[in-house]
Image (tube, rainbow, N blue to C red):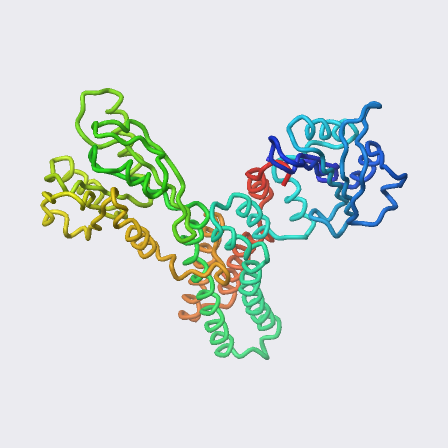
Length: 458
């Protein structure tokens, strides 16, 4: 929780720790330049308070009469900075010791250690960005594919904010019209008012529903599709994972039960992260460790977004195969019949209704067909991340659903010719629900929680 004083000057390491060419210590706040001035000894004498904004200066960081590091120091003066406060960034040599030594000197000279996400929180509180843009920042940092990064960039540019504010402006116009009718009833035509509210609410509702529809796709771009490979031992699960990764990541042998625990990897499928898990083969076994692996496999499959159910086409179906068909009947499932390169013994009549894909992991046949099926199943093939704004996160989806319910109440009220006061109440609630998305109408505790999920230094 970020229950902290935003008037403090804060500092943190803004780059990943570890060996690197450079590391950056970021300082933000009213005393940022004063603190830097205490520590920075330039090669050419200069007063940092008098230098131009957005300039870089070469010198040393000196603390307690010792040179901490040779640095490049950037001075950026408010309000044209990330936080709209004075910001100083100290570019040190990379490596854990160099960067932390500079940060330590900065903290001892008057700055406070920043909380996770506090720089971006200040950008939000100071009006530089709204909450949709702030959330886009962390989505860009965590993006696993170019497509997910591009979707987040649209939100950072303010595309989602513009759409939300457009809907809110429509609602505000209706509220103003109702208020004018209440204050000046002699000029109010009730029929025209109801017609106007009906048409504008229908438009607002359609806009909200379009954004809600994008939420599931947005979640897929952000979090990926949790995918479990399921099947009996030796059907080719680990070989499939290796083929999809194009590397020998999983151990493959002819010995049943080789895979006893799960192995998770990320694959990029048309810009969507496919979080794929290889699981232990499903079979009855006396081996305690293998039993644990089998149970874990089933639990993962129950929670998965997608199951890749594999059969060995060169063997007849067994009882475990039939049980697996029953097990996944209510799940999104792609059925695969592997070992197409061998003589086929499987009874296809028992799996034909599952629309199986014939594959040969050994010869790479059918792998692209799997990707195409995933694309069709999750309907992300027509999404253009350069133009389509995607809702990201359950919080935004929940706010949109609240707005939808209130707008539907408005339509019901108009249909029943109920007093305009009732319409006004629901429109106000819808307006507020949409404001939760941009941060215009959101409780402080929820805002704190959002920023607490950011990394340090951002």
